[in-house]
Image (cartoon, rainbow over all chains, first blue to last red; front, top):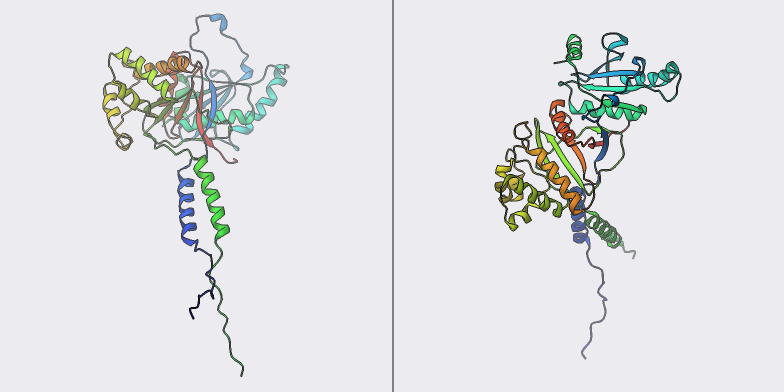
Length: 172
Length: 204
C-alpha cells in the first residue's frame, strides 16, 4: 500500500544569519555616512565701521577697559586702561581656565565697585595681531561667553601694541 | 543494558529577535540620514562651548582654509539660480539653463568667475579633487567675493523673503589676517552680525 510519508514535520525555521549580517552591514554604512553632530554657530557682532558722526564715539573711563592683545604661540597680553599709562599690566598670560579666565572674572567683579554703578561694568577690547590664528579668536570669544562679559568688541591692533608683543617675544 | 546517549547540543540560535532589532535600527538610520556631502575645502573647525545649532536655511557660508582660500556657498537651489543670474548680469557672462541647473546643485565653490563654467562642467568627484578650486579672489582690485555675497543676500531676500545669515567656517590653524579679510568684506556691506561655525568643546 502506498504510504504517505507524513512522519517528519519539516521545521519552518529559516536561517537568518545571512540576513542579520546584511542588516548590520547596512546599519554600519548608514551610521558612518550620517552626519550626526551638527556644527554649532557662535554669533559675533562687530562694531560698525561707518562712523560719520563723532557724536557716536563714546568716551569711557580708563578704569573700565581691559585690552587683550592676541599674540603668537597661544599667548595673550593684557593691560587695563590706556597703553601709555596702563593701570595694570601689560602682562602675558595663557588662554583658558588657568590663564585669562580668573583675571577676567576678578575684573568683572571689581569694576562695578570702582565705578560705583552696577551698569558700568568691564569693557573688554580684543585686538588680534596678525600672528594670532583663528582658533585664538574663537577661544577668546568663547571665554567672553564663559565669564559672561557684557561688553566686548573686536578691534584692530596698533603699531605700538605690535611693538609690545614683539618685546615680549610673542609676535613671531 | 545501559546505553550511553550523547545529547547533541543544538547550535542554531534563534535569530528572529536580532533580525527584528537590526532592521528597526536600519530603518531608523535610513529615514534620518542626510548623506554627508563631500566638501571641496575640508576644514578643521575650532571648538567652543556655545550650543546654538547652525540654521539649515537662508544661510551663506564662507569657508576659509588651506592658507587663505575662500569658498562660498548658499542654501537653497532657487536662491543659487537667482544668485547666478545676478552674477552673470554683473560680469556679462551668460549661462544656459542646463548650466544653471547644474550650478544649483553645487553646495560650495571656490573659483574665480572666469573659471566658473569649467567648474559647472565638471562632475562631483572632479570638483572636490585637491587643487582644482583655488578660492574666490577677494583682493581690493578684484573683489569677486563681495559680489557673490551681495548677490546671495539679494537673491535670498527675493526668493525667500528673508534676511540671509552669514556664517564663517574657518580652519583652526588659519592666520587671523585671512579671517580678517573675509570679515572686512562683510563689514563693507554693513554686515556686522555673523556667526562663526565651531565644534562642541567637551568640558574644559
